[in-house]
Image (cartoon, rainbow, N blue to C red; front, side, top):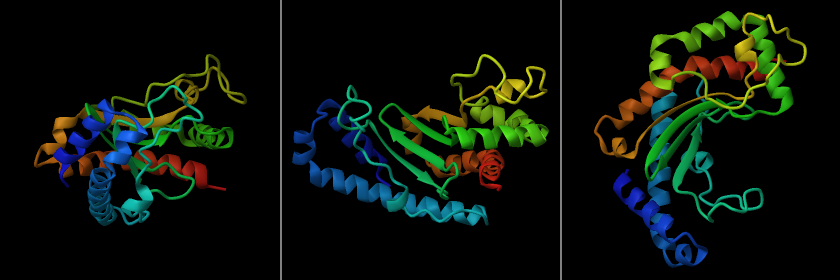
Length: 218
């Protein structure tokens, strides 16, 4: 994967964020996108070899659109400042997200502000065996990579149906159940970048498995 070309394209796009510029540089965009999709195909194979429950996600299926959704975010620029994709993308579950951006990159997973039924399923699972979840997020190596759960808005009081005295109330008050590892973009140029992705993926796997089981159990 020619990450240098990808970053140079994103920088040029960010400085000329318009459909006119994109149309004039469509060939460059397609070259970068094709290269990124091939790299995702490779990572898809690598991760499938690590996990027998991995859900096959070819690059073309995992890659996100580079266009911003201006219908819901009219003040955003026309195009994003990164390439992003989800792997291990089983329907109705939280995938493993990779984002390569101009100044920062992200590897993340879980559920960001899920809908009410999904959120209820996660909270019910924690109510049932929250000690298992607590052990996962308290693991030293997990904290070293992710710090903890993704910081987002929380309920002020206990969720409906739960007591403020619940032993896992601080977790239950979360509206987002996700983790993220951010790092500077220059790390993508290092020889050990793929190893880094593998390490983060493996560390996140018990966390994702717990949540995905919570939302798929009938």
